[in-house]
Image (cartoon, rainbow, N blue to C red):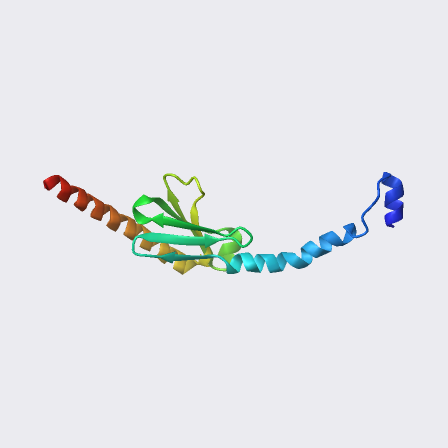
Length: 136
């Protein structure tokens, strides 16, 4: 079979070329599971942290006072499994947005509300600090 392909194209055919798609089919579920396993988020006193990726893992650290929008989204596939994503966007998302992906839908709603509350709290604190500096 490979000899016929070689003769038809005039180029040598690598013997393992037909096996490459099979290798991708076998490795795709493993890679997908590892990608999902390495996703996460955490909230701190002054920051929200998100982690995504397996081969190239990225961790985003966003101070609450830098948050501009907090958006909860869900694709058709996420909604079927009662999952959602929460995107924490800043004014300068040069390194990409911080996103908590494939989180339980109820947990995603709680995270969205928590980050929004922390944003308002940090803004009030910054206004109070500014007012106290100006009063001195």
